[in-house]
Length: 278
Image (cartoon, rainbow, N blue to C red; front, top):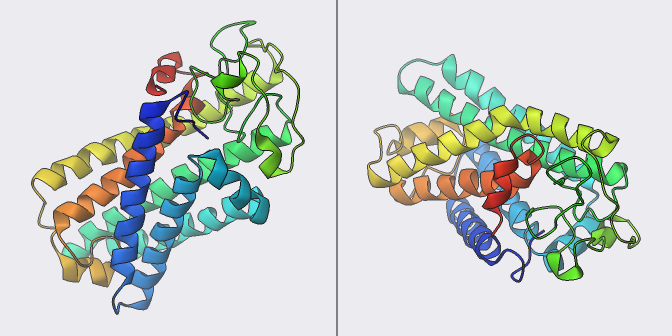
């Protein structure tokens, strides 16, 4: 979670991105459509809504108290398989549908990144990290350094609580904990954070590359992006109706928003990612 006080740009930016992707998903659902497209659009809506409620504490705590985090991880894991299936089906088809197959595999990777992020939260929650808010696993930069909630984005105790930070994960079934203790790079939590960061490298690389590609299509949509009929036949949603530039912008909101929200997970491996929280 983020706060307007500690990370105002990231807080507002993520809210804007995920609100737009949510509205676009609702727009896509407000029509008659094929069964596969309906499933895919519902999946996109669910991802947008969950990403939106993950931003402020006031939304995430009630959400996570009702829906257990393992269930959320499993839910998005299912849609990784769903979009993977659509991608393989598309690649086995002829003509333009083959290009739509690659598009569906891109969605599968995006949902894979969401599943990775949530699994990282679950991992750190299970390890009972003091001062970890939301379990996202953003560690301090150097040996023996204390966790810096102001510099890390997602997952740290809020900077307004001081450098130690108070644990805000009560909404996830944890009682509030005392001041966070220093962690060294050789400690188990930091080792786990490093492993999670390494796993995230290909996913984060995809999200950034896809976001750049989405912006290109906002400026100049490709023939595949503007192919409403092909998108409907492919069944992966998000592009079946409406202005293709807005569809590409909604995809950018999801891909870049997921990238930006997850940067804190990469800090143990790539410390400069801490600068994405401001």
